[in-house]
Structure formats: C-alpha cells, structure tokens
Image (cartoon, rainbow, N blue to C red):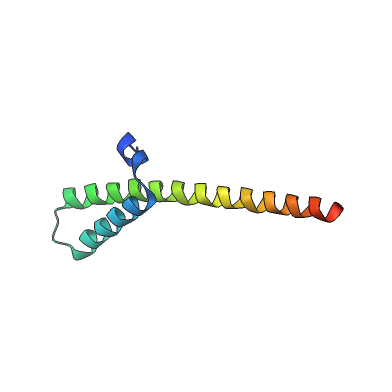
Length: 77
C-alpha cells in the first residue's frame, strides 16, 4: 500500500530512491528481513514511477489529440 508521503514524491525522487534500493539489494549483505523490506519499498516506488509515467503519457496523448483536432479544423477552413 502506497502512503501519502509516496504520493507526494516526484518522479525523479522516486526513481532515485528506487535506484538506491536496487543497488542495496544487488550488493547483498542484508538480512532476509531487511531484503524483504527493501523489496517492498522498491515495489511501492515502482508504482509511484509508473503512475507518473502513465500520467505523462495521458497528457501527451491528450495534447497530440488536441493538435490533430486543431489541424483538422485548419484544413476545413
């Protein structure tokens, strides 16, 4: 479950923290409990990043659709 703090994270913040989580997991040397906590945090951060990217894609699609509509209107004139 993603908390309110995670919802306030910007894409770059979440991405950078996710990179650090992955680095720590790949380095090893953590207990099973620590590894599980890191993995869970990584999943939460990945969801935050995914939401940001999906939002950006939706905004881009909307802008492109608006541009196509405007171009279609210009051609009709």
